[in-house]
Amino acid sequence: MPGLKPIIFYDIPCVVQDPRSSPLTYHRYCLTFKGLPFQTVWLEYPEIKPFYEQYSLATTTLRSIKGIPTPVHTLPVIMDPNTNRLITDSFAIAQYLDEQYPDTPKVLPNSTAALVHVFHTAFHDAVRGTIMLGSFRGAQKLNPESKEYYIRTRAERFGIPWEQFATPEKREEQWNVLHAACNTVDGWYATSSGQFILGDTPCFADFMVAGLCKWIQYCFEDQEWEEMKSWNGGRWGRLVEATDRYLDCSK
Figure 1 (spheres, helix red, strand yellow):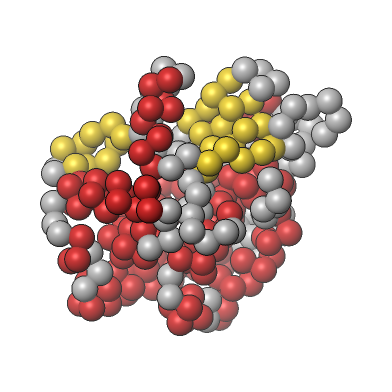
Figure 2 (cartoon, helix red, strand yellow; figure 1 turned 180 degrees about the vertical axis):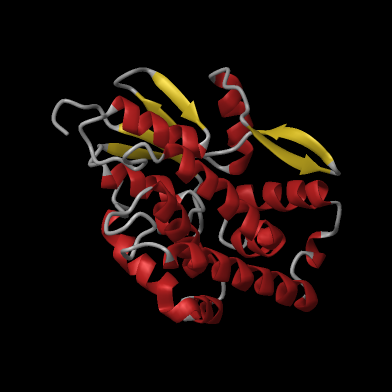
């Protein structure tokens, strides 16, 4: 958009030289869908907490660490130089982009913010039981500095040795949870009149699901992605193909 300074999107770098390997891909979809200029600033995992402290950002995410809900420093974060605002939390970022740039396509259209927020919560609840397998697969793609930090802190968080995150038994159990989650989400999509959750135009909910699929495509084993994209009549492979046009990885 003419006259706008690029929004800064803080993301996590990986050894795979492709931003689609980031678990934060869904905000790249949103920014491109809205036609907003942006640029990526990469933060390794150990740099995230000092970044929050530098800008006096409040943590908005709680994680259970040894059974205790604990504030954690997470991405995504955006910085908008046009308003000098820093926004944390994925859903808050989507709301901000729609409110601040009302003449761009909406990622939360037609007063659907509350419904999409319910979808956002339910989707994360559905896939929550796969977090250790996802952590184990994703860590293999991190740069050494982040990988060491990530493995150490996740083992502390879950209270089990890293080697036990994805044993064959745990891998099968969590893969079945993912399959069940996909079946559940497929049921939601089946009620739509189009290929996206609200019809023929994608919204934040679609970008969230497609972002997870894209991350699995790049971070899991090839045969795992091939299996997943065949589930539910090929819905997840088609969703990735349909949203790829909104995935600008050049910035």
